[in-house]
Image (cartoon, rainbow, N blue to C red):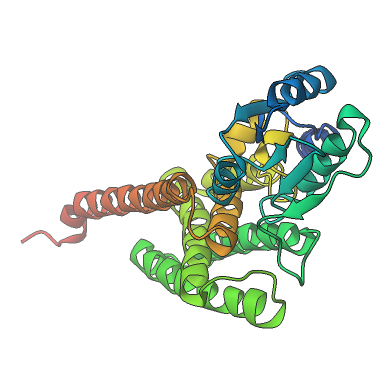
Length: 321
């Protein structure tokens, strides 16, 4: 391939990547709408409210009828639902802006139009941090965590030739990155409540999962592994993470897929730990642990392959007697 052909190929490849990135980032943002969004209803008009919601937004809500207001509040606090509509007299709305400010706004708007009521009282059961009431800071926080993890994995791969030394670098990055990032997020920006050690541990696990995936893939696939890791985390994981909205607001099945990748799992785990008392953390914690373990396992495969190669070369390196 001559220079002109290479230039044409690279230009077309760059255009294709640009198109893919536009689709990945703009498409979910332009199609935000409830899709099986879990909410609770209770009271004597619960069935009528459920019908109105279904008629207004077919397929938009996973409506769960609960016994009373106390049960609805428990469901919100345990992250089983995003909010609740209480009937009996004037309807009331319970929301959890900490789970998703966008969902909280939508639930308030939907509920205030039920039965012609234009000003249904709204109570925020689990409120977002007072320093970040719209959740914009939280949404902007997840991408730097992912990008720094990618950067750490790329730098370790390109600048550290020894796979054992890369493993050490991963450990240092995860520990130092977790401690430093949460000292900024909690100590300076005040974006998240919660115990600092727990939040720092989550941040460190996110760093290990992302950087470990890049380092592990590179150890097995070479530099192609860097590209594969970056595409997975940035092109798929970040736009479908639901960090700025909610997984149930994204096109199907991408919201669910996003929760199986580190960016989405990180956003959910951080929210659950910071605002909901560790409710519903098993799923996202398992996802992050699996990604971290997979990255380390791939790195181990790369180490084993290197050892076999060295052993095969040793006889040739030893002078004949």
